[in-house]
Length: 71
Image (cartoon, rainbow, N blue to C red):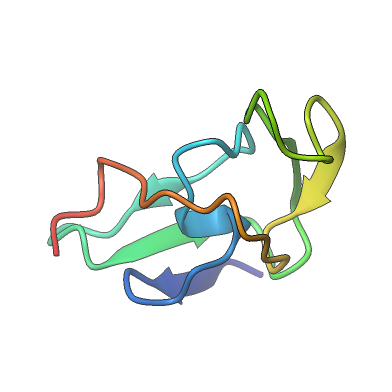
């Protein structure tokens, strides 16, 4: 079941460095994934999670908001 993550929640699904399957809703307010625990690789070069699978709901201190989110 699809899950929506609001733009103001700092987790992998809304992070610029997460390479999981996602999209935005029409207004760019939510990152939409297949489910809450969807996986994707972390592409941040200097954090401890580089190139490792991370769930959409995870958080880390290297967060940067995904540019596709408008707010």
